[in-house]
Amino acid sequence: MTMEETVAGLVAGLRKGTLDSRRAIVHQLADLGEEAITPLIDAMEREEDADVRWYIGGALVRIGRPAIGPLIEALVTSNDDDARRYLAAALGGIGEPAIGPLIDLLGSNREDVRGFAALALCRIGEPAVDPLLKSLDRTSGVQHTCAALTLWKMGELGPEALQGYFERKEEK
Figure (cartoon, rainbow, N blue to C red):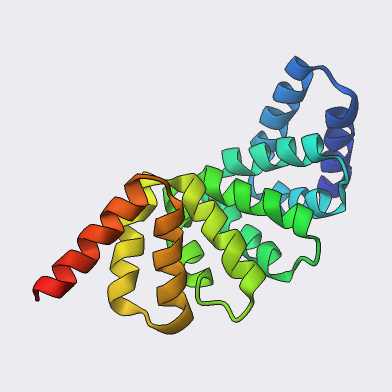
């Protein structure tokens, strides 16, 4: 049985399983490791059921760091905004290791890609604040603006950090 067939069989179980069986399937999918990343992303892009997409994203989060590059690539190349929401959520769920690549996407020439990257960074939250502030010092144009707007969208933590950043800049 190929990896694609294995992933497809497990994903089918996500469509009809109980909560406990779905959680177990997420663990099974994650245990397949790096080899399952591309079939999982393909399944997420084809899937129509939001719950199933969520569970697939959970498996990708559990795989972790090795999934970042393929998730970033899918986020940029997919034409399905619903799938990209779940791709971005998976990147946000992976957390700190995804921050740098997501900040890089804030400089994309595509507004939609920048928006999904910002959503993922907001989901990461506090660990993304300092890297976003540092990116303000080394970027310009749209990436700089998007980093500032992402901080602004982070709730209380981001705007406070952003205000402090600009106050320090004025003092210099």
